Length: 260
Image (cartoon, rainbow, N blue to C red; front, side, top):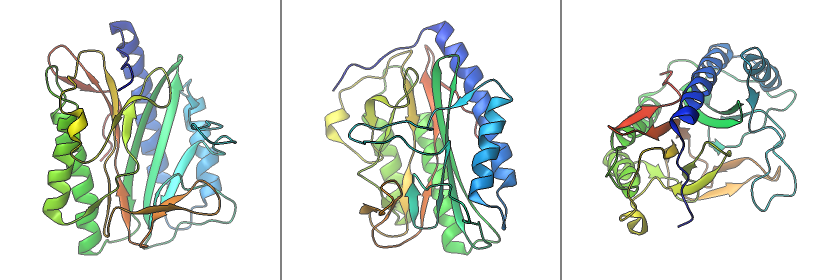
């Protein structure tokens, strides 16, 4: 595994400030995302919400390894079977009955935070309610495993146990990750039990983006022709939840406060 960076107390304080800003901005976007909302409008609103708080979007023009072009938006808006990286495009409108995931990242004073939330527009069917709840619960349970002396593999093991208890599929080709100095850092943080991570200790100063992605089908994914939007290959609904958390001397600190 590549070297895992550790952030100083001063950097963690900045990350916490930036994480609070990101959480506040995402909450405002979540409240604005109602039936009839255009994704292009939400994109512009997302940029403005960060700008007025002194931060900037970290996803905009971010180029993952292997990609020729940077991501064209500030926020990922994924709908229904879309898992991540849904694009904000003109004439795309949210509708009652949509399952919506918002994935948002911020850069504040040179440091990066990341979070995501999934919600339903309207009164969700019981199956969708269970999917959203299981994803949120898997995230919260995984966060509770973070502490000095615990193992990186504990995170994915916890998520897998919870998801399989409810019969949901776990996306395996997309994972959580380190964060702080960059949008994505080592280590990868999978949402399943990976024995190769079982002997990697968590240490104070490590900063992780934990993000379970569950589906009502299986784990397989595919990318749409736009080159960005990743969807469940079987067309089933998907949910995504994420926070940034740092390992502290006594436990953990959630850098991006939960909004649900």
